[in-house]
Length: 322
Image (cartoon, rainbow, N blue to C red):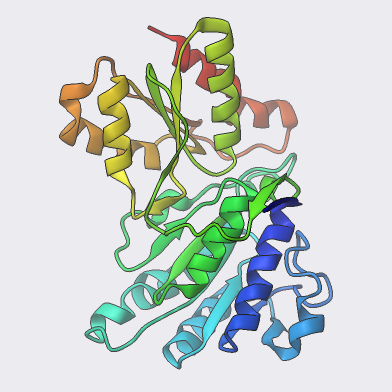
């Protein structure tokens, strides 16, 4: 039985359920006790779980460093980074400690920790609070990177991330928190499997996070206005990438478009395009198309912001081109 709830409520339920089920799970970050998190995603948890919900000083380095130590000591920290834009401050902890400890200790150390990192653009949030930085982590072995696109995937993927025995970065688009959608509590989503969310025969459209909403809308218009049948894939995870699902779709359609909000240059779309070109080239009937943000900081000005970010119309134009 599914219920219509917001992404914010869905992830809050995931936190509460995992904390009730496992006393080793705790959460900490900036402004999560009194404020309940900047998007309200932790509101009320302190009332139920007390000191397992902690406010911290403003130091992302300390947050992740403490999380690495806490995880190696046997607990399961969930760390709120406030905004993903601040994740650069934590790169030594992520790159040289969090991702490598399991390997460097010969498998004797596990790091069951989750970094929650709200990413993506918000209206007028400007260059330091509007970034999609997930591609940074594609080439770091030892971590998983998941990116939900809906309340359902938000809840199910967060629960799976908390249960995972090693580190997970959980990018959640800032614009998703107020989005409402059906959530079935029985749904279980693995951290390594994409989903075909719309069947089609003419073109494969791969997306994730908030951009998936635009991808589905563009696919509907392409079918209604131009008769183009689009198969839409929600990646859900970018580390690891479920390339097999993409290969099978490209084999059927012969065309591939990848759309994401992150900057096109060096983005996840480039990695997918390279893998398909290497392993599925024989099925392609047209060049691969990548859609992403322009190579520029996100401007404060709304018209300029709109000009930098990709949109539904960009995807539609790519779908209907011959």
